Amino acid sequence: MLILSFESSCDETSVSVTKDGKEVLSNSVLSQINIFKDYGGVVPEIASREHVKGIGYVFEKALKDADTKIEDIDYIAVTEGPGLIGSLLTGINAAKAVSLNEEKPLVGVNHLSGHIYSSAIDHTLTFPLLALIISGGHTELVLMEDHYNFHKIGMTVDDAVGEVFDKVARILNLEYPGGPLVDKVGKEGEIIYELPRPLIHLANYNFSFSGLKSAVLKLTQDMEKDHIAYKIEDVARSFEEAVADVLLERTLRAVKEFSVKEVVVVGGSAANSVIREKLKDNIKNVILTFPSLKYCGDNAAMIGISAYYKIKRGEFADMSLSAKSRLDL
Figure 1 (cartoon, rainbow, N blue to C red):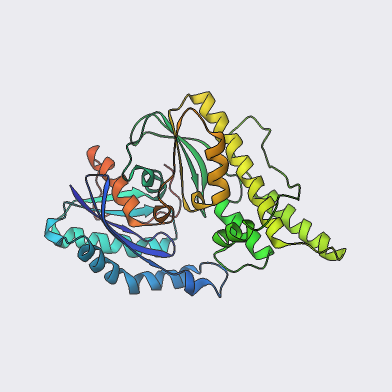
Figure 2 (spheres, rainbow, N blue to C red):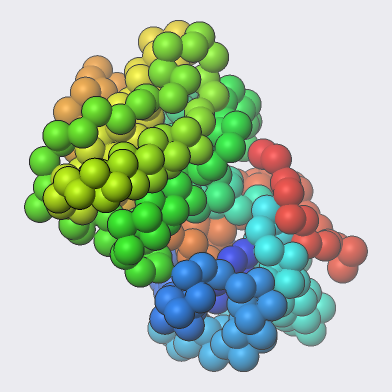
């Protein structure tokens, strides 16, 4: 089964060809990161225009890289949400056009399910499993008893992990996107500042990172006010440790309560080295899976892999498919 998939939920324009729900034949990604460095973040209107400009290029490149013709494609998949409405519409309209013109069935895919299934590329998932989604806009714990059986047990009540990484990066005068740079400078730092672990002692599985961001801001402002020299490397490393501790505590408790056999950690922040090492060092006796680094960020390959399991359930879309800024699993 060959699936041509489109992803344009934020600032990556991506088209991919996947085979049988596990093999990635191509994954063309056009990033807008360099465009938004001067803005310090994504500007939705500009992102939408860039998607329109780039979608044709990545479409043709995906087919070429896969050495595949459009006639050989069996299904068309596309991210329907959550995401930026204007950006989503570019991918959806492109997918609809190809589906209609080539008479190929259309599948709408939840962006978060795509992140979860990025861990299934070249890997067989073991159920029941726990998915920890940590991306720029989402931090969630999702329990799965089987394919496409999603039960959200926890979520962030304010900032997502990726979002707070970018905000702390701005506090430390690091450019956008901040997550990778916080990780980079943190490698040269030490854990010398005591920062809060929000909600860590509460019995539920929700997350909160806004207070941690505020604590970093207050820490740096107080030191500057008192003329105390500090290294941003130490602040970054101390901040990362606090985030990783919260993620680990919530995940470990859920592993025990729900007796899962596997934990998958997905999303852009799953690329963070401190989070990876913290979870690897402390999660034992269950399978722990991270996607390849190239599949942690937004990409169409994960949408194609997720679509495969939706197709197996016989769930398809029609030309009424629309973009959804908010969409729960």
